[in-house]
Length: 191
Image 1 (cartoon, one colour):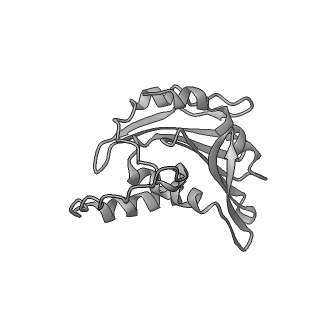
Image 2: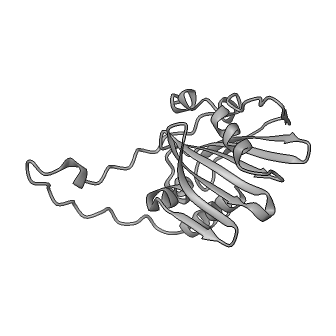
Image 3: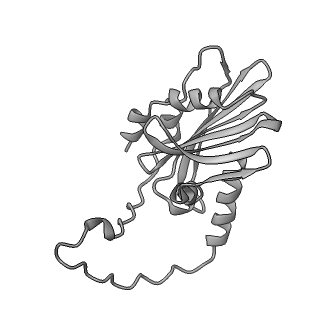
């Protein structure tokens, strides 16, 4: 999770103070009968993020885990997004769950979209990061066995980022369970 937000902060910093890029040149028209998949999809329009307390209501209770008081936040500068987070503990094991509404802000979505677009798997020593599908949503998993640390992230409805960062765990099972405990259907329906 810290890695994702570090990338986000760098991206936001790089975007601050830069003038708006010029509009793209008109796209070439696609000949009649050409495959529609050849045309790039239009980026969704920016929307105001849902109130953070609405996201907070989606932070689940997990059987066998103690959930600390949730924290909710609306960030307005330099881009608007909202988030809710909760910390769970079971003995020495720890999981931080964060639900973020990007409002389709490209700066917020870029870190996960870049990795998902690559559809890759990275290995560094005993660490692995790969793309996965989580409860029908595209996502990523990262795991470092020697540290007992990992992260599971899902992108819901192309807008909401659900991330569970686990520490002092034997595997990613608990983090996967926490992410799956979030009601993706309800989350995707938020406006």
